[in-house]
Structure formats: structure tokens, C-alpha cells
Length: 590
Image (cartoon, rainbow, N blue to C red; front, side, top):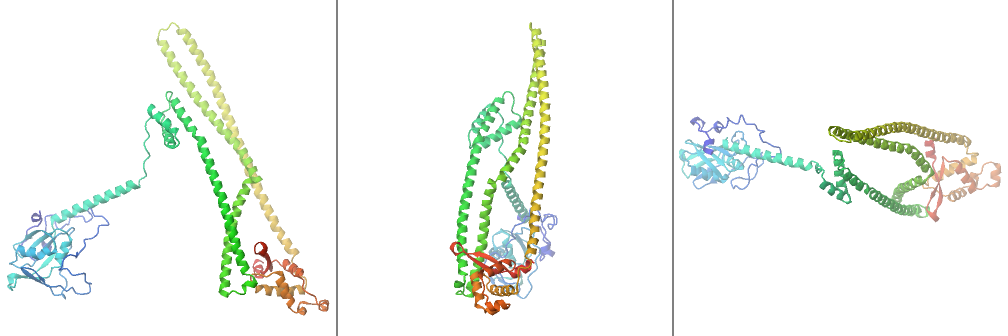
């Protein structure tokens, strides 16, 4: 194969590897590079390890320094490292064959094998009469090792004769066998890739439903037994549904199907009981969650109480500034989490109260009244369907009687006249019954239309009632909003004297430096420490030496809602009322 894959060349192409051609359709001009190629195929690794003559990789900016290679019959001298690397042609796909030119005239095939077998296993050598040959290796990476020897000067033994020396030139060569093997490998990889993709698609494709067997008496008995088993009920009821939709129900199999439908109906009570048990479990879980949430909320309250007690004046003054900041941040975070949990717990309790409220009971009665016409309409539909089925059954019986009547006409029976009369009477009775059924069907349809109209009217009434409720709620909200300006007008002048204005200024200054608030006793004690003359205005006050009263100060601060606000801090026995200054917030609101 290799000898046939390489073609003879003339003497002028001795040192030109590009002129080497192979009978494979030109120099691969008809070859499609995308034939069998796939993404993800790693490139051929050059300079594979394992050969002593191949040095480790060298940076591209440094010249490659090659060493002298000693063989048994010859010696290889490296080229000048400052010269540019020898030129090579474009590498053919799957190349395992190299062109070697510049061989000595006295060079034999044994010398070529001795030099190039260090690059790897040699499959075939085709030596020309001139100073070149073609070498085919077992693997592609061996070609890269052979290219490393390009540019070396070869000398046979110690002779300096011109016929015993030469300069090697190694380059890629095109061979039909290499191309054929490469195409086979690419096709194999493409087949593997297609197989992998097909397996992946089959793995991701949803499974098809199991086939349903055809109806027979034996299969019917098996399905009937499965319907009685709770674990196999879902599979059996699917088979029953498929049989009914296929039209397997007829006169002969109607009893069997009725017994299977009856078995399916017996599972309704079981399913209702399972639902009740699940609902009970859900209620127990809700109760456990509510109890756990209450315990968490109690612990949050205790933690917040610790922060508030640490924020009191007798303990607060002993902490450093950094410690106070940390305590304030922790207190704020704990209060936020406590409020979140409290809102959640209150929402659960509110839902429970709404379920048991009278409004909900009234709404359920209204919905029941609205659902009654719907249930009646469904019942009438079922009656109409049953009547329609009875009509079909009677028509089938009439057709059977007609067929039997035709048969009796053909046969010579002595009681023919009597049978004819009986048949005519039966037909008349059936026709009368059919007329009655048709009238009843029409009457039921009229009742159904009437019930539908009543349902529409009830829905309209419900919508109008809802709109009225929305309007009433809006009016109540607008009335509440209209009350606020009246209160503002009544309390437009809460400060009645200059003395109260001075008190307001002093209290505001005092509370402004107490961001966590202060009790009314603490405020009054601060006011008492000031000079009485600063707090007394008018001759009567100065003469009598008026003192500050706690109730008057508290009344004054309660009148100024946009300037002072009162908050409750602490839990249980440590509950305390604190006044805070909110004048800047009041300015934003106004």
C-alpha cells in the first residue's frame, strides 16, 4: 500500500518536497476539510516526550541550540542556531509520512533506519535512486520528532568525501494511505458523536405511557381485581377509562363495565378519609407553628427588655461610646425582628378569627344561595342526558322489533296476524312513550333556561351589593379624614401664656439631649433645679414664687402632640412612660 501510494519523481524534484504528488486526486484539492470533522477533537501534540534528542520546549525569542547526535554508522552535526528555521509546507491532515532530502550518495537504507528509528516506529521506507526518500511512521506525533532533524549535516563514519556527507531536509509529505486512515478515523469519530447525541436525546426524551391492553373477558377480570386494590387502583382506573373511550361498552359487556365502575366508586370514601387525615395533620402543624412562634416572640421580648434596661440612665452612663452604639444597634435590630414575628403571629390569629366571624358565615350563606341554582342546573343536565340515552335505547328496540317483524313476514306462521297485532300495539305504546319523553325533555330545558336566568340575576345582585359596600367604606374613610381639620382648628393655639412657651422651650432643649426620652419626674426635677425667677412671669407669680406642678407640665406636653410624644418602654413590672422630643418630625408633617 505505501509503495503504491507514493509516485516516482524526476531528477529536477530531488530537493523539492512540495513537488511530491500522490495519486489521491491532486494535492488534496478535492478534499473537504470538514469531512467527518467534529468540534472537540484535540490537535496533534507536537514534540512528544520520550526521545533523548528532543530537548524541552524553549521560548520563541531564544535561538534553539541543537547538539551533535552520534550514531553507529554516522554522525549528525546541528545547523547554525542563528539561521532561520527550515521552511516546511502545510501539514496534510493525518500526516504520518515525511520527505527526507539531502541524503549522502553512499547512504543506505540501514543508515536511514538507524537515524530515524529514534523518532518512532517506522512502517515503511521508500528510497529513491537519488538522494531522497519517504518514511512512513506508525503515529502522527513521530513526524514532529523527525522534523526536528531538518537542517542537520550528516557524515558517514569519519570520511570527509562529498559522497559521504549531506544536509538533511525533512518536510511533510502527502500519502494516500495517511489520508485514507485519517478519513476513516474522522468517520468513526463522527459515528461515535452521532451515537452519543442519539443516546443523550433518548435519555432526555420523556418516557412514553405504557400501552393499554385490548379488552377481553380475561383482561376485564384482571382489571376488576386491580380496582379493588388500593396500590394498583390508579393503573387499573386508567385502563378502564381507555376502554370506555375506545367504545368497548356494548350490551354484552355492560354488566362487566358497571361492576368495574362500582368498584371505582367504592374508593371515593377512602379518598375523602385520606383528605380529612391530611387536613387534620395540617391543622396540628399550624398549631405547633403558632406555639413555637409565640415562644420565639416571648424570648424576643425578654431580649428587648434587657436592651431597654441597659439604656436607662443609671446603667447607660457606665458604658463607653462604642458599647452604647453597639447596644443601640442591637436593640434596633431586635425590635425590628420582634415586630416582624409579632405581625406574623397576629396575622395567623386574625385569619383564625376571620374564619369564625359572623361575616364569614353570612358570606357562606350567600354563596350557598348562589350555588343552589348551579347545583339544580347540573342535576337537570344529568336528567336530560339520561332521558336522551333512554330515547336512544327505545329507538334501538324499535329497530329490532321492525327487523323481527320483517322476518315473520317471510316465514309462514299460522299465528302471523296475532303477532302483527301485538307488534303494532307495542309500537304504538313506544311511540306514545317517546312523545311523553320528548315533552318532558322540552319542559326540563325550559326549567334549565329559567334557572340560568335566575343565576345571572343573583350574580348581578351580588355585584351591586359589593359595590354598595365599597362606597360605604369610602364614605366612612372620607368622614374620618374630614374630622382631623376640625380637631386642628380646635387645638390651633395649645400655648396660652408666655410662661408655657418658656416651659416648652426648656423642656424641648432638655429632651433634645436625651434621644431615648425621659420620665415626667425626671423632667420636673430638672425644672425645679432652675431659678424660680426664670420660670415666674408677671407680678403675681414673682410675689408668690410659683412652683412647677407635674400635672401641669404633663398636660402641656400632651397638648403639643407634634412636639412631644409619649412611649411605653419595658415589660411587666419594669414598664415605664417616657417623653421624647419630636419637634423636627412635626415640622416635616406640617
